Length: 79
Image 1 (cartoon, rainbow, N blue to C red):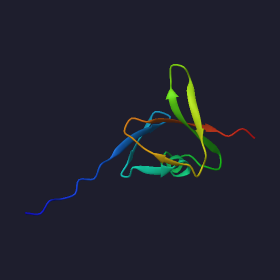
Image 2: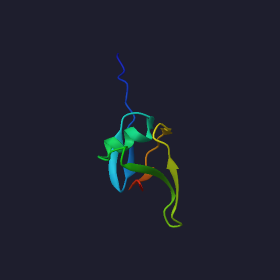
Image 3: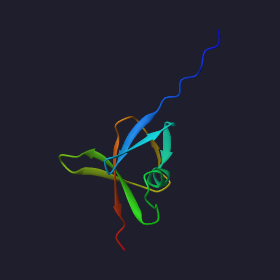
Image 4: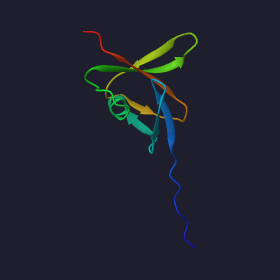
C-alpha cells in the first residue's frame, strides 16, 4: 500500500484578502507579490492586535514562518 503525502496549506490574509500558501515560510516581498502588491511601493506589517492597532513592520527579505490565520497589512510606502 502506498501512502500519499498530504500537503499542508496555510491561509493568511493580506488587507483581508485570503492568500493560500503551500509552504511554511515566505519572505515579506514574496507575500506582497502574491497578494498583488509591489514590494517596491508597499510595506507589509504583521498584525499583532487589530483592536489595539498593534502591528510590526517586516523587512522585505525577512523570512516569515507562516501559520493559518495570520493577518498582514500592506500600506503604500511614504516617500
